[in-house]
Image 1 (cartoon, rainbow, N blue to C red):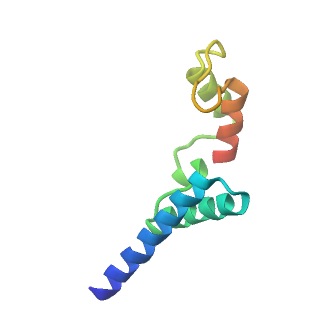
Image 2: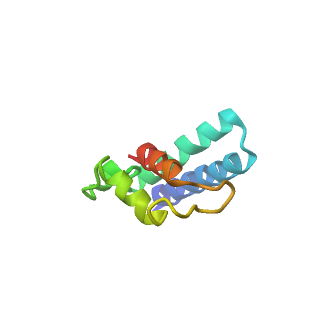
Length: 96
């Protein structure tokens, strides 16, 4: 029981550190935060990439996915930064 509580405490501290690092946006901290978040997901046996998800998605599917997301390149996604079709394809590549 103690071991489980200690593990949960360590994971919670790691999660908080990741959130703080992501919000601060410091270059070294950002990479450390991303690595920490990825390690946290792996500790939960969660996939951290499309490849690990074993969804059957291949790089050839990225164009189809981006077309569906952007209405065949007619629309963009708004947010912190507007994302066009090519941006979406690049995000899929990075997630693969």
